[in-house]
Image (tube, rainbow, N blue to C red; front, side):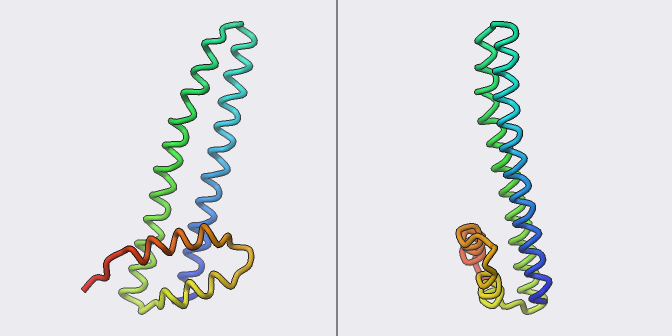
Length: 119
């Protein structure tokens, strides 16, 4: 059960990383593209469209990231309820892996500890 929880956590972190990388690419392309179009057509108002698209893209990222973390949390809580997963052991195992960012891991586990225990 612990190995499955580790794999679920690593997949969730990979998905979050992929989302973050994609948002950076989209924002960069959007800003560069609007600057290029504004230069070509000499209409500087077009730059405003690129700048206004950034909050929309960031909002989409935050929504999708929250969904990914929520799905991970639900899966881990399900394993805890049905399979007897020890969340403290999972946290200890994952923090011992040097390549996992501590801040990301702690923020994900903070969502687990804020979840009210089910009776």
